Amino acid sequence: MDRNSAERIAIVGLGPRGLGALEALAAALPREGPPVSVIVFDACPAPGAGPNFDPHESEVCRLNIPMRDIEIDPPAFSRCRRFVEWVAEAPDPDDFPSRVKMGRYLETRYSDVWSNGVLAISHQMQRVERARRDENGWYLLSGHVWRGPYAEVLLALGQPETSPDDQLAEWRRHADTSSATLAEAYPTKQLQVRAADWAGKTVAIRGFALSAFDILRVLTLGQGGRFDGGRYHPSGREPARIAPFSFDGKPPFPKPETEALDARFSPMTQETERFSVSIAKAAIADPQQARDLVDASLIPVVGRILQTFGVDAGSQRISDWLGQEWEDPGSQETGGSLETLQHGIAMAEGASAPTVGFAAGQVWRKWQNELRSGFNPAGTPPETAEILIGFDEGLKRYSYGPPIASSRELVALIEAGVVTLDFAADPEISLTPSGWTLKKADNAVEATVMIDSVMPNPDLGAVRSPLLSGLQDDGWLTQFAEGFGARTSADGSLIDKNGEKAPGLCLLGRLALGSVVAVDSLHDCFGAASGRWAKGVIDRMG
Image (cartoon, rainbow, N blue to C red; front, side):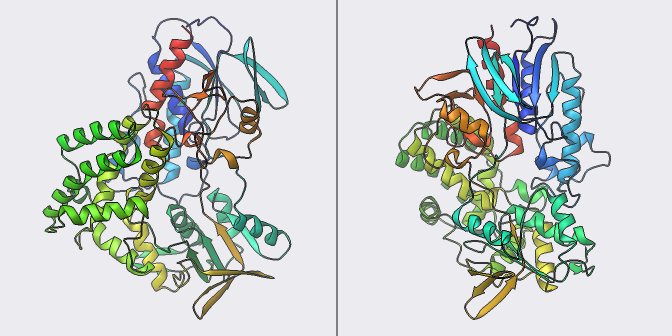
């Protein structure tokens, strides 16, 4: 690689994904010689952390990863310590740290890679609006100025703005023409400020996944309330009533409470090795073969684990559960919202034996790295990718579960009368002059505030970003399949309209879902995908 050239590499996006790419590039380069010039573009003032882990966000929001499972170690060249060593106080391995604390750590990691001498990094605090290419390389439009040329451009974007679904589009029009308030879940700092005006009001939350737990903490702890002794003590500044809802009304299951309990769900080394082989085969198989291969790996492991808890599920019962999961995820759980919440807590604290689903979900969580390693470089056929990704997404209700403390807080809020689950499962919703009426059977409540916590799907067809739309129009960026993200190769290179690698143009992360799997993870940002990209850059630039 010619280190004496002008700026050769541009990275668009400087959250954890962009940071992981910078670290991988720095780790792949030899230590000697002048630094390689890299320019990064991101308007967010938290380099390395990005908006999801912004150190200036609300302090009350937690990661959904316990300290014991945070495995994003810095590269060998780094002077920065591991997160568990960087935290000032002696960390409890079962603690779920705040998102803000992780953001500060990621900023520290960025400062370290910025100053290590291998890369000469400049940061343009502006968004990139367009990209074009000529015989000299890539040019990026930022701040009304075309910058370049660059030999390599990496798109390390998060979730861009997308076209709203029909329901949300109608609600936005309603909020614009009435006294109703429609708010976004993030940034939570902004939500916390707005919530100061919602004391005594009824607030509905669209979506009952992880983001809903962030919102509940912002609306309660963020307004001065506190939890103590399993009870919620209101401040008087929180909403009078909070009504979360979703299609099935079921909250996600919390993770096992302690390291000792969590270890009981760990696959054996040989079981994981068998899964690694199976998922690599499944990724290039037809859909039915893929299902069979995954089932053959999961069934004996789940059966063995359940037996250690005194549960003799039998292979057929586990097979039947998995068959239903492939076809209709979550349909096996027939209990109501509160029952599901309480049962999840009981399993997570070890007071109740795990179900087939809980055990399968924990095993799947522990196999995420193997899943990515087998799937992401494989070039999986779209019809197979669809079922494997659907299976992974469905099991997120277990594998991406919240801290058990958050689930207990929800119970305390219900007992205090602050949260109601009466409308949690697919309520009938009608618009009123001042908000929304949620109705189930003969029960109804009117909310004057609606908070949208639903994360849009990474559907390239719905993306509104001028940068991505322009690349699609020019044929450089193509969709993996309907409803999915971009077509990319193993090293992140975009596949153009002719089925060829776009020269020097790559994309990593959520917007490549379909080409890759399990992208909504902090661990994925610092995983093998960044290393493959860095190697590809060095190979292409000689």
